Image 1 (cartoon, rainbow, N blue to C red):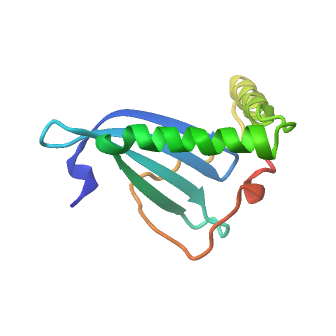
Image 2 (image 1 turned 30 degrees about the vertical axis):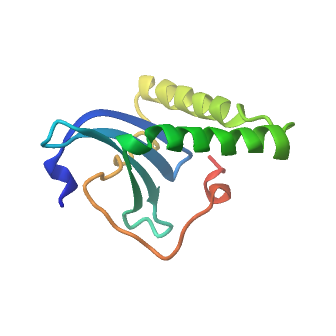
Length: 137
């Protein structure tokens, strides 16, 4: 079944460094039902396109998915790494976005001139980058 046959009714994007972006899309089926697609899009190391990984989340799983996700995040934050500054990357992202906005206001920048992620291509690769690969932004 071709996912593009279903109407996208809401989208949210999370940029995670220079190479990774997460997309949260609410889609509507022909039967007036809704589901979520979670997509991780990662720029390939060789610069030739993007690798994409998708999860389809259906309404009957929303509560259990959310509960389990919250449990594992809380376990890491509370039990495994309670002293870690989890807001560090939010601050860094805000600083980076402010820098890009300032450069754009001054007449453009190389970073902002890069092409946007091509959301139409769907590919996969054997090489899966780690979060550490994407942290130097």
